[in-house]
Image 1: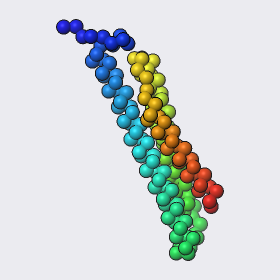
Image 2 (image 1 turned 180 degrees about the vertical axis):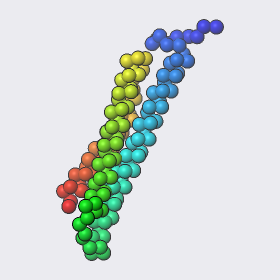
Image 3 (image 1 turned 135 degrees about the vertical axis):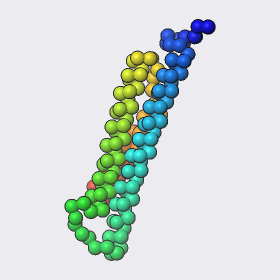
Image 4 (image 1 turned 180 degrees about the horizontal axis):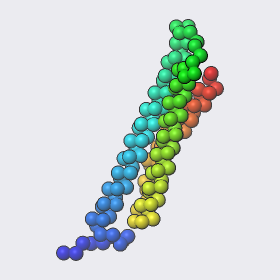
Length: 131
């Protein structure tokens, strides 16, 4: 029995394989977004925790080359860079899949990655201007 073909000229099993691959890329991007969200929120929490303790006078201001402020800032930067690089890799793979198989990418995972990037940048700006 011959396999049916879809409008894109692919057999049904090939079309399902391409769809599974696309969904796999979506899941990978979402895992990267979760990781970067954790890095960003962890960095901002560290910064705020130590800033509050310092403001209350519970700890003295000590200037280390990597203090709480710098560590929090670094964690946020790593989170933002990570989600941006993951988004770029996702877009590149989706373009490759679309050019080869005619299956487009879902915009929702990429939109969420953009929102998380924007929130990370807002956190960075808050730390920079808060001093």
